[in-house]
Image 1 (cartoon, rainbow, N blue to C red):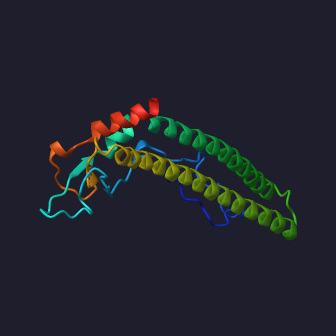
Image 2: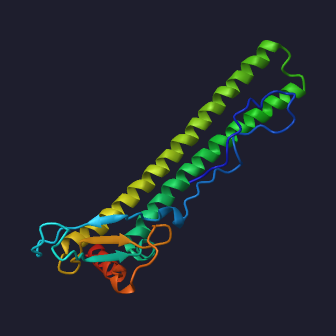
Length: 214
């Protein structure tokens, strides 16, 4: 999630002609579906129906499968609900921040106009108003950081909930998923090749959606 960088310099001085603003006219929370990519890494499961006491068996064989987390993120019904909740929070914070930012910008503009029109005639008055605006700017910046943290925390909670659902399904149905390892096979995961026969994505999605609907 990204927003435009804040101009942290003191831009309220009358000798600066350019407009003073905290950031762009609209706060941009970049919550794209791509940011919700689930990182599964590697899971190890114990199969209670197997005589193996560990993942290392005498013949050296391992039962391995993989899922495509990108597909899960687009086909698991719970994901759409969680994404909607995230966007609802994002939109609410975005609206509140934009209102606060516009109020601050209006005060800066008025201050600059008063300086240019000679309505602020003493150095003390100028310093007082400039200090007040600088303090308000810091408050708005802190608000921005707080809102960003809220959205990021919500996003991490979402990913954790989805990940827990996947792991739970695989562990609770050992007859259907009798694997020692389940890998995430997508671009950027470090796995160069995976045999399609090991792909259990469809089975996992079907089980996830069935449990979600029930």
